[in-house]
View (cartoon, rainbow, N blue to C red):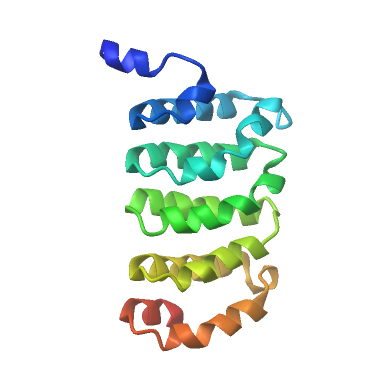
Length: 187
């Protein structure tokens, strides 16, 4: 680790989380994730301090920094008592920013969506975000959104999910011009 790396790790965490250099943000995400993992109290003020910024962290444009931000989000969802309150605004960003990305980030995005369902946060924002993602113009993102929705329904069962909006969204997906989206819909 050079002097430059050390300078990227110095300064207030709040400033580094929103810094202009991706490595600085990445180190800050790692530091906050470690703090979340080491925090014993699920109601600690540490969780609420940065909770509203999590959607912005998820949308980081740099893939390695985004990967660390997703690790941070997973730690937050796993540990924080207030996660139910802050999870719904994250759903749209998780779908939009991760499902069209490289496989590591995509898998972590789906894992975060599953954790949101698991912590008994409202399921409707997850379904709505995935249905909006399935209609995205980017076929890769749309395919992964359908795949993630099928995965979540298979993992948690149909009773947990509101079926009316899902069934309503199926006909256009069955007739989609992209063969991968049609294949995932039939799955």
